[in-house]
Length: 169
Image: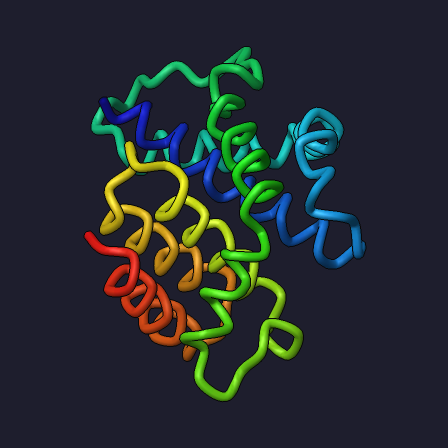
């Protein structure tokens, strides 16, 4: 369903932004789940706008109803909680995997948005088997095209391809 795609893309995008915010603010990734509600409330207007934009993009219905949306309509909170818990339990392994395949870049030197996208995608690939790895990679590259510089999508795709080869399809 097209509305589901808009919800999934919006959720993934704002999950990446939550990871990024925690990184920039030097907050412990172990406490990420505790930030979800405040983050969603603080960004509600932006989240709604992004969701509406995506719904219109994925729909061929010119009379699409986009009024009176609630956060539950636009964000998959369960997915966000799963990612937060998986990052809490596996952040060391995830960062180790990113470091292993990022030639000439350590995670400390890497652009923070690139790192946030990589952490999210590697987390999905390692911890959420219900999401096809190719979908995770494709969505990560799409995020990189929006939020990163011109070289980042190729850089991110290369790292993620190596991670997939190591952990298996």
